[in-house]
Length: 315
Figure 1 (tube, one colour):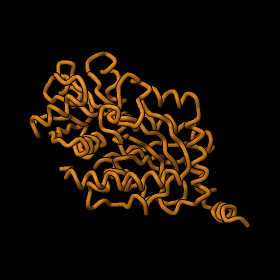
Figure 2 (cartoon, one colour):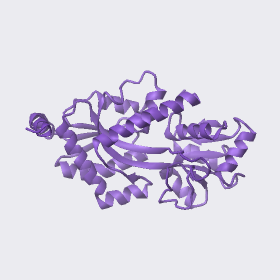
Figure 3 (cartoon, helix red, strand yellow):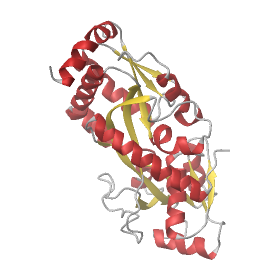
Figure 4 (cartoon, helix red, strand yellow):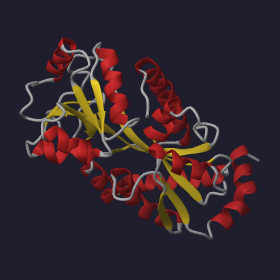
């Protein structure tokens, strides 16, 4: 008997029991935010594919680590899955020395949901007309140019520190409790530069309230095709993205992971789901559990180096 067939056969009783209950989807961030919105977009079509209800449970706190820990400790029977992200499985492990879970050992990868760019932007009144202008100003006044983000330990924070290290300058991180107050202070001229998710900034950019200088992904953002990448702006190889994936508790039966991966990929291929995600600036990805495993390992190494070299702290 083929190994995969054997595993599916042995796991069948546990999976059958789990399928009798709703599938719990833990979102480690508050309701109403971009992560929650995308999770809810895929929950319904996943439930249709699986033939069971998908119940979204928001477990926010400590940069996503509260919800991730809850998932890591859940029964590994295929009845609990969790949104993992750059916060929980990229930056967080390097920032939190006493993290209550191991991002590799305590989870079974299901697949990647999306990757999306961050945007480096300024208020129209700010003198810098390009990203090289900002770097020149920061080099002239080391540590005096501030950049606002949605908080300590977030992907915008890490992206800003990685850029400063690669470009060879120092600037001042100014963290806020979420995107809205960070954007408000940049618009008011209290902080010159903003780094934030595309979903939070695109309407301000389109309305002319913010001037986008660059996006952080290797390619340009479909929602802002006129905005250059950081790499195009003079720093080849720079790349950072905000991403979401699905994982399950470690030791979840392989057969359950196979079914969950198939349901996730089917949801991402659904026309209305794709359109909804693209409207939020999120590029659907999909793929296999092995693809996600390899990606997370690379992210852990990448952001550990950034945290170590920059001295990033969460307090």
